[in-house]
Amino acid sequence: MAQSQIYVGLEIGTSKTCMVVGEVRPDATATIIGAGCVPSAGVLKGEIEKPQHARQCVRDALEQAQNSANADIVNVYLSVTGEHIYGETNVGSYRLPEEETVIDEEYLARAREKAENLDLASDRFVINRELGGYSIDGRPPTLFPEGLSGRTVDVNCHVIHGMRTRLQNSLQCVMDVPLEVSCMVFAPLATAMRMLKRSQKESGALVIDIGGGTTDYICYKGGEIVSCGCIPAGGRTINNDITLVTGHSVSMEAAEALKCREGNAVGDTKDRSLALYRTDTGLHDVAIMRGELNQIIQDRLRDILERVKNRVPDELWRKNALEVYLSGGTSLMRGLDGLAGSIFGTRVQRWPMQPLGEEKSYLNDPRFFTAIGLIRYAQKYEDENSRAAGWPSWLDWVRRVFFRTK
Image 1 (cartoon, helix red, strand yellow):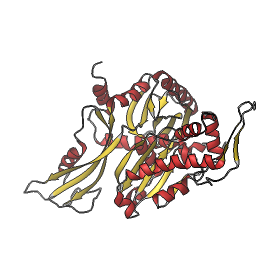
Image 2 (cartoon, one colour):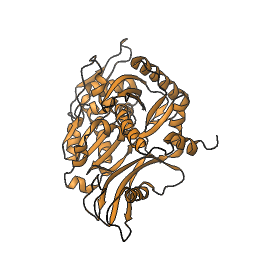
Image 3 (cartoon, helix red, strand yellow):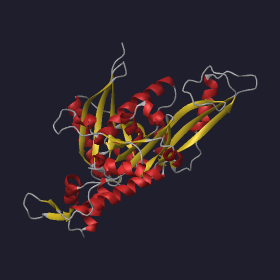
Image 4 (cartoon, helix red, strand yellow):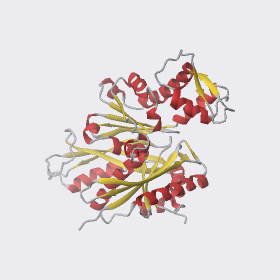
């Protein structure tokens, strides 16, 4: 009788280090059975800066996750991000032999092989390969081409890659805990696994995950990835802006509190009333005009969102072919959906927070969507690998590539 499988997702973010434990039953339904989350240290803009600090955060999250799930954790699916990561669509085309007209798995495999093998510089490493549908003789793509008649098979593959050395820092940090890394996953790919249904990917969807140090995005149309990447700015960037504009009279702690409690991404920038931050001792109370605070927030978020918009094919905006979905801690910013709607000119959705203290509120907390999405990615990954039994494991291959001198 088939047994349930345990999968673990690990996100080492700029603001938090989060580990989520999921149980996947034989009927493919999944339940989150535990989680651990601690403030991050040693991480800058989504990348490891001080390994010893980041490693301790992973250990602390691991201890919490193991205790809450009552399970031993050995392997994790690791999300990675950084401005060095981006994706390219590569087309694989195969023409059938003259005497053949029926598409079979051999011909599909040859098209896939060409699509998946993107010529990259030696310092680049492929993180994920995401296949699209198959087009037969130029017809609209289909996911089930085997048995159809045709002469030429085309398939798109979105190849996501990053700098080998910078990815190795994340991998080594986790392996030193020690934990095994079953697979690395580009963060917005995991986030989309939590947020989007197949129908939304078909009709057109742009997921924007605004975290503490980075803004990750991924765009789907026709069920395929058309664009993805990372902007090296997020919620903490806004905090930096607040401290700089005020001549460092506002601390980072105060800036975070003022931004979250008093700021509004579409608020009145002429409001001269004071937004106050009071400490428990009253020794470091600070104030800033609400209009100035709103202006700082709007300027930075507008810059981030416009940079994302400029990386998505123009024709998708002209055709009004996308809906926008917001995630990440900064997506909770008041007025952000209104600001995004004015920039993108389309429908914008974000998830409302559940009340504090509600049991397992992280399930619908956009700050946890990447880690939860890793569980769903793990299901997909294991299903695909089971169909390709006998291939070298991802981990064995990564070890040979990254640590060939050991």
